[in-house]
Image (cartoon, rainbow over all chains, first blue to last red; front, top):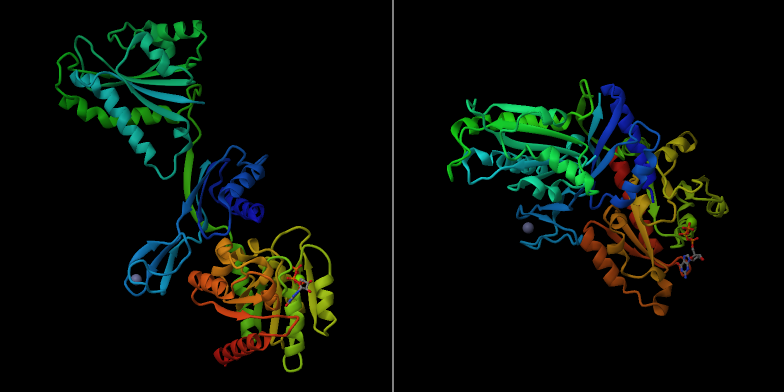
Length: 114
Length: 389
Ligand SMILES: Nc1nc2c(ncn2[C@@H]2O[C@H](COP(=O)(O)OP(=O)(O)OP(=O)(O)O)[C@@H](O)[C@H]2O)c(=O)[nH]1
Ligand SMILES: [Mg+2]
Ligand SMILES: [Zn+2]
């Protein structure tokens, strides 16, 4: 349950952006959360809406895009989603796979009133 | 606030279908947006060929109604777009059967106890041809489609009650890692410790897997030839640090007071106290197989421990710990006779997830497998020193 501490980091980054843009209000936040990010999107959501109370993001909505665990085979070049975590190429059986996506934990974009 | 954008008309009658066409187009466009701006939140789109009281069902439950429809005048400027405030609507002579009845429809709906829109706006387009069957949109009408769509968007962006300019909305692409600050501190720690030739190891496992017991054994094996120190992470108590100190090894206790993982900055705070001539720095993370996996502490080697009583099905259940580790240590091997743990199965599952994992099987009570583990630690230390030289 480290989602609350992640949300605290999120608000630090959001504050930076508010200062940079001289914004008056945050109205929307979008995150990218990889399958292997180590966080539970639902907990992140709960923590976000708890944390935002009384801040300039109090009316902000949160959108979370879940990112699949995606690998590329270094032997045959095929790209594939591996949500079972078994790192064996579907096409050629190689175990030499390179991760392309799935560990993201990103603040992608924000919508603010300026 | 719930808004309905309602396209009225009939596609079979030439230009009369423009409201339907435009609303359909806008719905598809907004649904395909990666990120819906807030002026499009809670906005619904409907197409409708009905008029009069038949509309009651369609408009019930909304707070704001925006109607897109055609009007026909005796000398039309075909394609001209009007935005009409519903409050003024009653005073406009009704050239189209579609919208003259709107105020009446709403009044009747209210009388009947239905929730009717408080605000009604009409986006009307002058049509050239709404009486001929099956002609499709005239050229003039097709040309004005972008303007109609723009007018609807502007209408949605404005609050219906707002007199003046609405607040400007700005969308900013940020693309920042929420764990970025931890990662940054961790890389600095790793760089500094490695440049001093110190091999740092982060021990990760659920509570009671035998992390401290293994560290006690490691102390027995290494301390005569190597200089080691231990950072102990626990939610409460100095107990684990005291167990290590009893072996004559320097140990720091970090108590998090509730937090479920160690973070790089906690290690950073201890930095000034860490002797620069160490060979090995061991970090025992908080007993938890989930959260610590997300936090790089600046270690050179991450070890995940899994004990026989926990069961051989754990790798897939706690993927992050197993995919981010360099080394798997299966502990309490002396308990294999008593429990249905399949060592090969656990290793296989972990290796499928992370083929570069080094695997070891140990028992601290029987002192088995620990020498092999020490060989791995010592050869890793040598590799680090060679790289530095
Ligand atoms: N049978 C057996 N028991 C062990 C072994 N290693 C540790 N234990 C026992 O397992 C229990 C937990 O051991 P610890 O070393 O305290 O485990 P830990 O992972 O440090 O626990 P936390 O720090 O609380 O997460 C103790 O009762 C140990 O005696 C082993 O190799 N075999
Ligand atoms: Mg311990
Ligand atoms: Zn392949």
